[in-house]
Image (cartoon, rainbow, N blue to C red; front, side, top):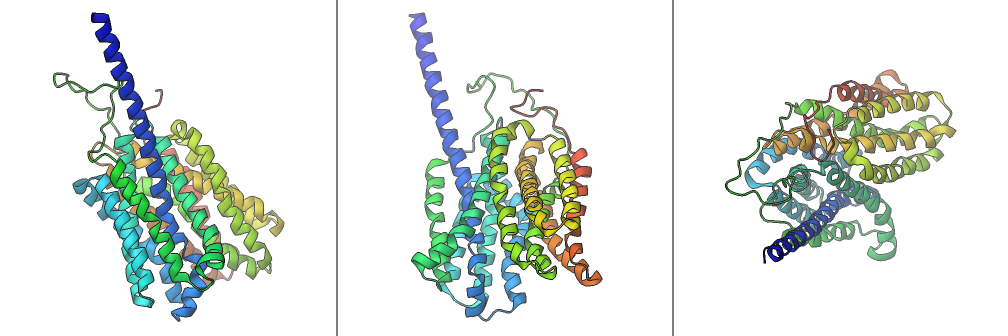
Length: 419
């Protein structure tokens, strides 16, 4: 009788572990989908930007504001989002964020005028800021032993969303929505967020999961709680500057490759360079998904990325244009490596209860610095009339990656890693 009871309890435990594993697979899939749709709505704009500029009679300055506004808002609102998430929780924050994203995307298609376009772009950007600040909080709660893997899948979704929107918007306009129908493209990408929002509401746990114990069981009321491993104090500016390195490199290259090649008389090389810069991110991101759990929290990947980008910048500035495809692929791969591993730093290193606040402050620093890179590069070009100086911020970002990466705090014990 006793042996039968033990066997029955074992079967129940096995069934519980299986259901828990299935639930976590579902949550990983949802985090990936959230990452995808936090970018499709944004990156669906550049392919139709000439149509918007023509139909709304926007100046180049006004057009630049439309593309820069989301970055400014996502950075500026991230810190406040972190404080809000401490009150409402990560699951609810993602729910509200996706709702704002959907509403902003659909409403800006409903009012074809400049002011509503900016207003509702700001609304959807606030939704993105809230959601992307909340995801690392949920990664810490739901996957305490697999922070690297969950963070990598989330950034895989972001990159997939960028590539999907840029690649698909043009064909959609030509073959389905109508070549001039930029408003219909806004509706299309906005409506695709709706099923993700409904799945999020239906499948995510109302109470955020707590880290599982080593034995996998539920702690009893009589069990004395073990103190959590001590975590070093980390600074948002430190993590933000490290994370900003990848974004600054990526945005600076995207911003200045066309003008740089045109100034040197090689405008025909621009399309290939931009394509390879973005395409190189995909295999690197997928490869990092496999090994992210081993690399997360380590110093050497950031040091290596900085050194590689600094050497690549020298090659970019000193070799003929025929070498550009190689250099842009290296820049694309290194920048996404920093993105993947940098996204995992706040949930990995934050003290208990501080993940949301640290994530928000880190994103504020990261987006602010990344946004400044192309601006500073353009200012240097204007001041000294040397096109290559537009890429000077990449040198600064590379040095920051090496210096601050070498001083990255080490957690006393990283969940899921062998000490």
